[in-house]
Length: 528
Image (cartoon, rainbow, N blue to C red):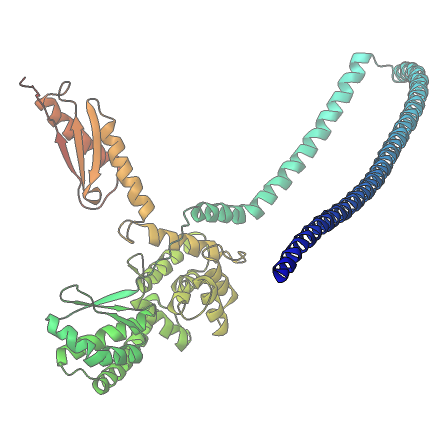
């Protein structure tokens, strides 16, 4: 029982102890919680105080920065205001200076005007005094003349009319003698200068016909029997045509044109050598590089010999002696040169004859004029090899081979490129123009061709009842459209006849011009 009691007491004590411990634990926990709460509160208060302090510091910083920026802005605006004010003051000072300067200038002008007015007044006074003095002198002179007349009449015992008659008679005799001398002197001067003046007038009149033409043919054509021959001319991979072009110095054009091969080059002699060589090769049929070189070499010798013969024949025909052999050769080269379809060598011979006729009509040396005319286009023989125009090239050649100054000036100046120093120069220029512009000498230029077409259309449109007219077939036909309501069939025939007749009277043209008149009536109806 005692142990049990002990155990029971122990349990009661234990409960009390446990209860006491629990209370103590609760109290300790509450105390600890209170301490924690207090520490947290203190920490929070400290944190709030720190935040407030930081916020206050930040506010102070922002306030200080704002004050600094405001002061800086104030300073900048103040400086800008001071600068603008200073600029305005400077402008005002400059304007004041300009105004002051203008005032000074106005004052100077006023002073100058005042001085001029004073000078003008002084001049007027001086003129008035001089006018009075001149009036007095005039009166004195008239009085002296009257006194002298009276004295002369008293001495000579002649009346006024008798003295006037004697004086006029004497003056008339003096004038007759002086007039006779003047007339005699003028007649002598006219006899001395009449021939030269007449020569100059005629030359100027002839020179007005001068015209310039420069156009060369640069291609020749060679006929071939078949298109297979074109392949043989070209050769394998083009070796034959390359060898031919290298040997002759020209371009060979083989295109789709049937039966034709074109030889192109600016040197007319080379082009002629190439043409003849190609004809020989085609005729022979053996076309290869070696054969090409042989044929070209032989043809070149043949053409050069023929060139010299052409030149020699031209000198004989023009009766020109003592010409340098090089000039003779160059004349022969002109046989292969054309200008607007006109052979240049024949043109030169024609200019030589015309120049001779004109020179002899003017009393000049016809032989010299003929020499100038024959050589005037000698520069065209080498103008593709030497830079410059053919007149200057020809003048240099003539000077090099010992021609006279008259010939050199005529050759170099027949197109007006240099100063005329010889009377033969305008003669050759006129003869050149006459030879080039005569009918049938040269092909028609584009400008004249267009003018001819326009003239055809103008003639046709000028007739009453004609609505439209068109020149076609390169000017060989004119199509005329008339108004069918105002022109009947019989009147149409008359209009066509009149147009053809007027074209014959007013125009020059090769061949003939066909006049085709159209009168069309259209009737239109609609089926609805």
